[in-house]
Image 1: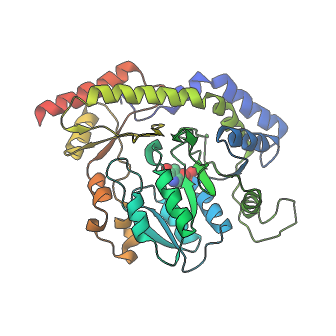
Image 2: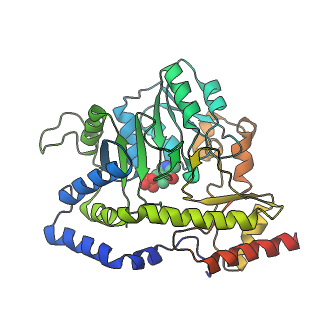
Image 3: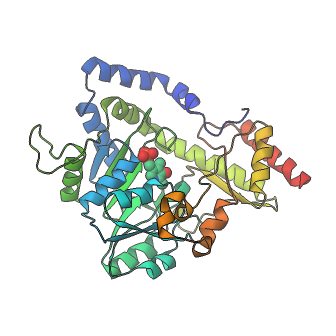
Amino acid sequence: MSVPFADLRLQYQSIKDEIDGAIAAVIRDSAFIRGPYVDAFEREFAAAASVKHCVSCANGTDALYLAMTALKVKSGDEVITAAHSWISTSAMITHAGAQVVFCDTDGETFTIDPAAVEAAITPRTVGIIPVHLYGHPADMDAIMSIARKRGLWVLEDCAQAHLARYKNQPVGTFGVAATFSFYPGKNLGAMGDAGAVVTNDAILAEHIAKLARHGGLVKHQHHIEGINSRLDGLQAAILSAKLPHLADWTKARHNAAKFYDAALDKMEQVQTPKVAPGRTHVYHLYTIRHRKRDALAKHLNLLGIETAINYPTALPLLPSYRRLEHRPEQFPNAYADQNTILSLPLFAEISREQQDEVVTAIRSFEHVV
Ligand SMILES: *Cc1c(COP(=O)(O)O)cnc(C)c1O
């Protein structure tokens, strides 16, 4: 590939000494499970996310499961989430014991439509999980106002939105809690699986920590029945080494996105990602819409440009939700998007030459169709 979708090797090379030193220190100290490196990352990430508590865990999927279990969802409860997301968001509603209720996206920003949320509320609704998809914040004023009015909790899925802001307030600080993923390709990525729940609620944080650590924080003191979902020391130290660079990497993603915007906005067939007023997009993904998406993807691929579709099928239309008997017409925006979205190569280290190559390749497609 002349332009890869992402390049984790380049990122490693740019901070190799810091990463190698962090890994060596954990091995030297045999601090593989819990210990000082995990404690330090939890403190540092809480500060970076502007929250009081960060409870680390094995991955972003577990983070959703742990948070909802601590929020005590039970059989018959309904939890509302977006029809357009990664499957963890909805699957964990089911695994935590509740019923998934899907809402369409707003047609502009790929995030949940507050009007659809309002319409989906029933007496059984207990909570809402907005997803800040691709790094674009959901409409938190509208969502929080609905939640307050109806007495619902809000759990923000921030897996793609590290450092994103809504009206200058960091995402992850609006709801009762928020979940993050540090999957290697995320804006802050480990070298393996990792995740966290953040919250300002000390009691909730302690409950989540117990759930993640066999039901207790002290060995052999099992206050509840938990699971084993831990961030390991190596990943924690790697994340601590990367965290100080996150703001610069985010700036670089933003600049790369603005470069694409300027070049692609001139092309009639290409719809560039919109940013709603007051939102700070962190461009985990740069996702365009194009009516001839599949042909464009093939064209780019032949020219050595790697793309991705995030995601090829709206959640309600996946085989895993056949039981809900949803039809595409119920989610017109998410359904239209599944057939037109294409994510272009974008990462902090992407070069101007690589971006030029992508733009030129898209322009050459515009001429053939
Ligand atoms: C990545 C992701 C998750 C899950 O995170 P993992 O660490 O891969 O388990 C959840 N929700 C969204 C929106 C994601 O992008």
